[in-house]
Length: 114
Image (cartoon, rainbow, N blue to C red):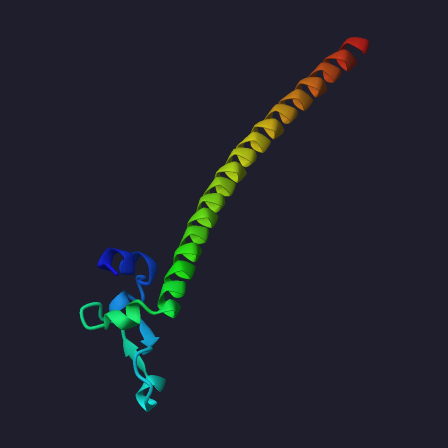
């Protein structure tokens, strides 16, 4: 697995790949119960090629894509909300202006009747 892929899928700002802990799939003794930091240069190819690792990588890729889509949807929703807010403000302003014009016209009509 290349480092770019590792950084884009597993890594994050708070837990870069070097600090992510994964169980060791290559050992069967009691040390397999402990967690070891991932180091791409030291990690055995057997561990990276295991079906569990491949499934995990695919699941992480799918999750990353879903997060990306959700971020795009959130951005679009925020844009739509801003547009709707501006349009509502414009509508409110137009309605107030129309109401003021009607009130002025009604006041003029009342003055003329007196």
